[in-house]
Length: 261
Image (cartoon, rainbow, N blue to C red; front, side, top):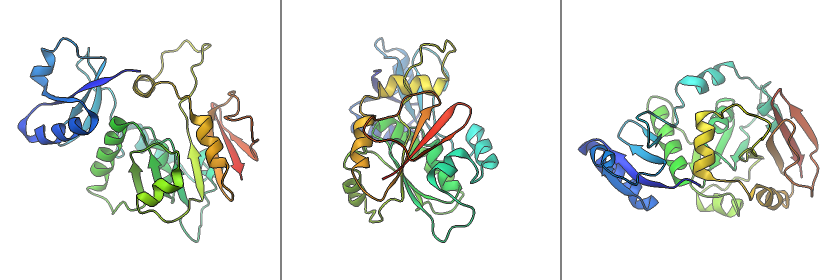
C-alpha cells in the first residue's frame, strides 16, 4: 500500500488548507518548490489549493486523481443515465416515487455511483474510510454545489462502514437506509493484460487490498428488512458463501447481486 507523506501547496492562499489536511492525516505540509528538492517523496503526494484537491504521482508533473462532479466522464454518464440504468434498477429506483429512497454507499471511493444515484432521485450517504479520498469527495461536492442547490441529500462520511447504523446516528442521520450499496475494490484479474485506468491504479495503491468486504457484507446482512446491492465483475464469485442473492442484474462487464434480507 502506497503511503502519502506530503500535502503540497503552491502559494500562501492555500497554505492554511494544506496545513489543516496535513495535521489530520499525519503528513507534512510543504510548498511545491520545497517538495521538488525532497529526496524521499514516495509514489504519490496530495496537492491542495483553494480550487481543487488532487492525488498526484510524485515522479511526473501531471494530475493523477481528483473528483469533479461537474464535467468529464461523470457529466456524460449523468446526462445519459435513467432509472433503466442497471445500477438504478438494482437499487430499486423508479420513474415516479412518492418519497426519495435513502441509499447508503458503504464503499464510496471516488463517489461516481453515489453521485449518479443522487442525480436519479435518491438521498445518499457515502462512507469512505481513506482520508485522502474523503478530502477529494468533499472538495468535489463543494465545487459542484457552489453554483447549485443545497446538498442535504448527498453527503460523505469519513469512516469505515462497520457499525454502520451507529455511525449514521453519530452523523445526525436518523432515517434507516432503504438500500445499502457495496462496490468493493475489484480483485486483480491475472487474465487481463491491459493496463488499468489511472484512477483504478491509484485507488489500488492508496487503499491496498480489500480484504474485509465480505465481513462487512455479513455484518450488514445480519439486519432485517434491507435491500443490499453488491457490484461485482461479471464472472466474479459471490461476495459471501453464507447467503445467496435474490436476483442479479447484469451488464456487459458488471453484475449487481441484489439481496433482500
